[in-house]
Length: 302
Image 1 (spheres, rainbow, N blue to C red):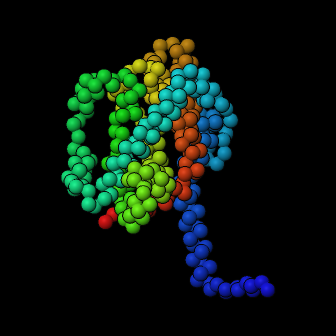
Image 2 (cartoon, rainbow, N blue to C red; image 1 turned 180 degrees about the vertical axis):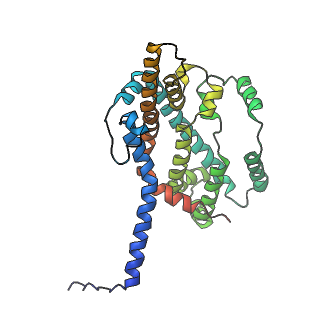
């Protein structure tokens, strides 16, 4: 015999609570999503309509001139290639360094644990400054090389602390003792047991490091001068500047050129945001579950 379904009668206060909760969540979701939606519809709308404030819920005067102008420049494909390489290599290196640094520091009996932790924390508040760092990069021969965007800032101390807290709260000593009894060494224990149990942590670190490398701009501006090595963010900036209105007007033909540039600049301005953001927005949903769980598990420190 099947179980009978029990229908619990809900009170009016419960129903009111649900309605208010859904209403608040809907408003918050709208506030978060609408700016992204507006940028998308503005990038395919007439610049005149956007400037006049007519574009609110749907595109007006649909045009793809902005994207056409944007992708006519071959540098954007070079920028995409470079950024993908920098993001993949940098995230992999950052993830490896963070895990192999945080895991030993999670052992409370590690000799010199507090000293090492103090050294790491010191770098969160003090650094050598821009000029000494630039001279160091030049001295190491990393200037104008792709390695500078991968190696510089490879270990984020805040992320390392999150990882250490995660290991402290997740990997028990009893589990390690049982593995050692079965003949499992420390390195194998880390690879075969710790890493599979740390999918949530790895997910959140991939998001943090991946987004940081994808949006990397300042380091490239300082340490990269070769056009072939510039990441996507720098390429998009240069395209936007080139299509901005900086020329002086002397006659009617120059006035027409100025108006044309202003139109392209308005179209490209929103297109640049879409081109730079779409890849990250497409990847994020696949690792969102690890991201949320990883943040919560790594947030509690003893």
